[in-house]
Length: 241
Image 1 (tube, helix red, strand yellow):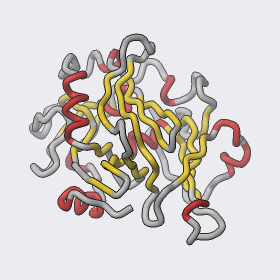
Image 2 (cartoon, helix red, strand yellow; image 1 turned 120 degrees about the horizontal axis):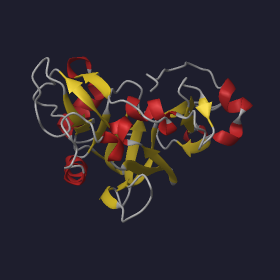
Image 3 (cartoon, one colour; image 1 turned 90 degrees about the vertical axis):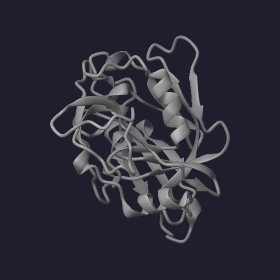
């Protein structure tokens, strides 16, 4: 249940254990934007049909350590909430919820329910509704889906913002490359994060996504961070990558 951390200019882990990292090309000069696609819900045991959430065509995502939660199109959130309609108010059945699965740069990544569901307290501004759409009063804890709805388009399609819920699950190295003007040299190197926020081999029982059981994360909505560029993009409905 790691809190997550950000390490500036430290790629020692990637160099010492390159086999556990997945390289995802960055397709932007201005942001850490990547190709995103095939967002769906999948049962943790892999059985049954997957539920498509969106982005069956071209989409894009930005991996951003300055965003406290996940940001996705409203239509995606509505489909997810329909699928998660059995989620209890106290998160007591959170572990039974499906994984949130998507592709980055054509490679599959998965967030367990503990990453995108949590107990919330406090309130957000009315312009930023959260999850199930309920507005919990200060001091009242409720179980919510930790996704902020924002319809943001780009030249590469609908936008997602993968904030700290993603970075708690995946140790991520941001690489500009030797030439800052060469977009093709930019990439993300991504590995499962262990419970001590270090890279872990997929399937390692110490990986954060493998810890059992995991308690719901408590989120104070009054302290949620959303960068100004995300707010502005949500208001305009557009973002230049």
